[in-house]
Length: 260
Image (cartoon, rainbow, N blue to C red; front, side):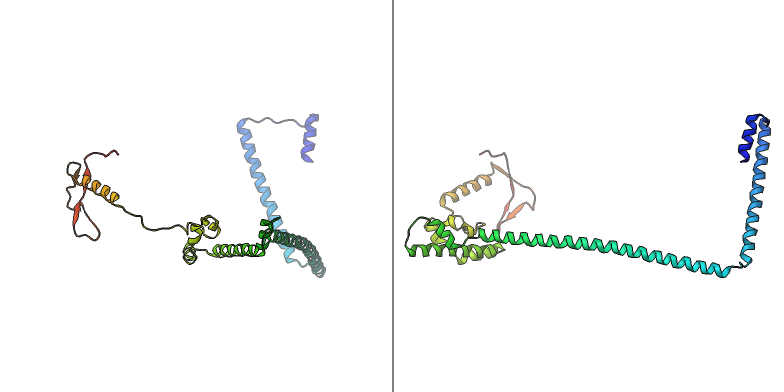
C-alpha cells in the first residue's frame, strides 16, 4: 500500500525526485543494504524469542488440544479405511473381470480343440475306407478286398513304426530287419518311401576296381615319379611313409602344371 501511495503522490507531483550522482547512489545503496540487514536480524530475533516464550508457557486449554488431536487422528484413520475399502473394491472388480475373461478364453480353447480333433479324425481314414474308395463302382471278389485291406494295414503299421524312430541308427536297424529285396525285384521300391526314408534303403558297399582302373593309376604314379616331370624336395623330413609299409618315399614337386 505504501508503494502505491508513493506512486500516486509522484503522479500528482507532490513528491519530488531526488537525483544523486554516481558516488551518492552507491553510498545510498550501501546504506539501504545495511538497514535491511539490521531489520531482518531484529525481526528474526523477536520471532525466536516469541517462539521460545510460547513453548515455555503452558496453554490453558491443553486438554482440549489433546482431544482435538485425537479426533483428527480418528478422522484420518477413518479416511484411510475408506480409501482402503475403495481400493479393495476396485481390485476385486478387476479380478472378477480378468477371471471372466480367462474363463471365456478357456471355453474358446476347448471349443477349438474339439473342433481340431474332429477335423483330424475325419482326415484319418481307415484302411477299409481307402479300399472302398479305391474299389468304388468296381466289383471284385472278397479275397481281393481282404488282401488289399491287409496291404493297407501293413503299410500303415510300417509307416507308423518308422515315424516313431528318432535316430538314424535305429532306422538302419529297421532296414536290416525288413529288407525290401522283393520290392526292388518287382519294381515297387518307390512305394516303400513312406517307411524307408533318408536313404536307408540305399546300398553303401565298396566300389568295384577293375584292371583298367589299376592300369591308369599305375601310369599316373610312374609319370609323377619320373625325374623329368618332378623334382625331389631337399629336406630330410620331406618324406612320406605309407601305412603298413616300412619304405619311405621322398616328396616331389611337379616341374610344370599338367593340363588334362
